[in-house]
Image (tube, rainbow, N blue to C red; front, side):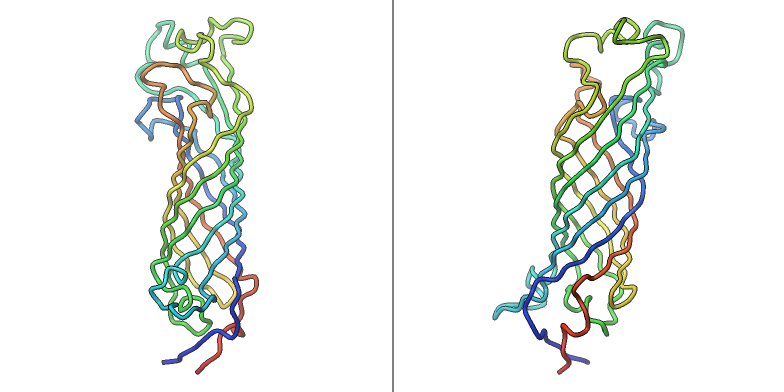
Length: 254
C-alpha cells in the first residue's frame, strides 16, 4: 500500500459545469399530483465552485475527520422558461370554471444563487489521491439559495388585466395574483455522486430538491385550500468538474 502525506497546507478548489432538467410543482395542474403537471419542465444549467479542506492537516486530522468528507459548493443556476397549463379533473366539462381553467397559460424563468454543504461518504483525501483506486464517491447536500424569477399569465379568453372576469373567481380578489418579477429564498436538499475520471477531472450526477419560501413564484397565490402550498422543484443534472489547484504534487509518497 502506498502511504502519502501533504507537502503543504492550503484550501483546494474545483469548478464545474452541470446541465440537466428541472421540473417545478406549482398551483397549475392538480395539486399533489406531481405527474399531472405536464409541461412544467425546463432545461437547467449550473456553474459551480467547490471549496474543500482535506489538505488542511491538524494533529487530530484523520480519515474520519469531517474536514476529509466535507465540501462547500457555491452555485449559479439558470432555468430556462417553463410553461404552465391547468390539468386534471377540474378542466373537464363545459362549466365556466372548466373553460376559464383551460384558457389559463403561464410561464416562469428562474435564476438561483446559493451555497450548499456536501458530505461525502468516502474520505476525500483518499479519493483525490492521483493513484487511488477509489472511483466513486456518493454524497448528500444541504443548503440555501436566493432565487430571482419572472412569471407570466395569459388567458385565451382575453386580456385578464382589462377584464379580470376571464379568470376563475378565486384569482380575482386583490393579492391573489403576483404576476411579474420577484425574489425569494429557498431550501435545498440533494444527493449525488462523483466518478474519478482522471487526476484533474471528475464526472458527477446530482439530484436536488428545492423548496421555495413563497407561494408567489408561479404568479398564483389564491387564499384557498388547493392553492396555499409553496412552490417546489426538482433538479436532475450531470456535469464535469475540474480540479483547479490540485495536482499529484500536493501529495508525496512515503
